[in-house]
Image (tube, rainbow, N blue to C red; front, side, top):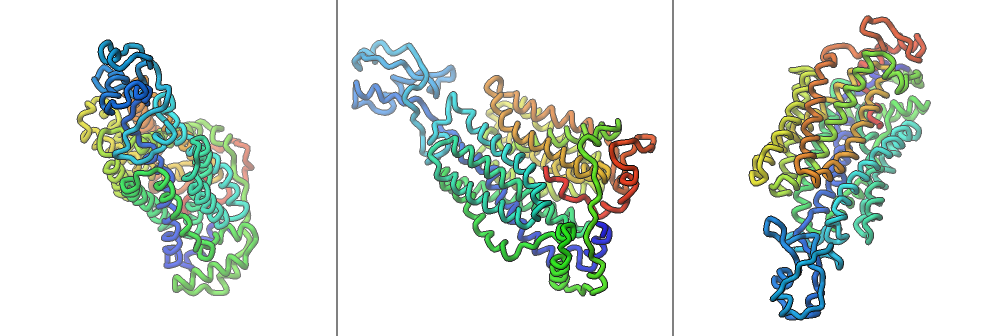
Length: 547
């Protein structure tokens, strides 16, 4: 049975009836909770005022006030505030000599730090001393989480094809809950990093198979809207995360709050359906019939026996490979540009999202705004691609996001509201661009290598997610470097978009042609290049996002 045949049967079942709406509603919880894990660490690693522990002087004069102790033992920087990573070298003088002559020699903190816990009761920074020469550890930890997503994408994509979408989602939920909940009780930061990597690993299984399950149950006319619904729920999760971070100023409690809700999804064991397309591909026709009949009943449709008799095992046609993306000049150009678009888009999206506390404005309010702005961004992108086309929408969003980031460099730090407004504009543009690039890439690549094309693009975005937290480390060399990277990348990507073709209103390409429309040998059988002309007219198979 071909994919087109299944599309006809899905029309009889109902492309987006009560059954599919219930499925999308259930899977929205996964998108909602994923926001907690992806950006929850931002509120666990909030840095607080600190200085070296200089309790040595209390052995000389135990009656010193805290202010006197700091004033005598901690040097000041050029701005007049106390150094956070330096202290005066301890001496064995009496207190009068110290007060009279003062101390001059400095050294790195030798006995830990003292933290101001008036605003944050406990953070990763205060508990594991992630300051000074260990300051970069928090950014590295976030990169390792993104690395877990990349590894999980490579593993859970093929695993979903092998054992089914439903079991992979259930396994991923269990792993995400177990590792996330366990991370709240660790006593070593490196153990925390390992568990965060494993949470990212589990998150990938949910991200991929969530999209695939929606794509394989929902008809082509409503598939994009069902996918965007998940994106909107993710944005709502970002807004709720701001409230959770504000209410829970203890990182362990916040970690529990981010992980525990996943346990509520235990009802998925009984309610989450398998993909009928996958069942047919594996020859499990009877189970596929049962599911389709159940869906038709919920949708108040009648699925006749004649229609059910048409069900037969789907024939798996041979697809191309990654190398085929680079065999022809046109495909090579499209592939490289689209990979760059995905890379810079992800780099700016994650870069801005993870820098929510660096704009000089209240971190909780900024996070709330960042989440809220994604809702119109995601919804608006659906309309912009219809009115302005894919190419122009992609280019404009990237150029807008890059320009906003570059302008931030020129704004004085004291104008925190202006900087935050520009950051919000950048977040709006990159969130919109993210939704467009999924649509654009799926339409740009030919059918026989579409899965590999979008998969490669998705892999580059994961690599950008790994790099984004590390780029913020470059600010120690110059404060403008991270935002210069976030700004220049999208502008380059936006300009290169004009070298791509417009795909709006065009049939999905099924073959790998040169510009002169002459087929080129690309390692695929000629019969393969000329078959399946209607296969993907239902819309892009979301399995292509497995990487």
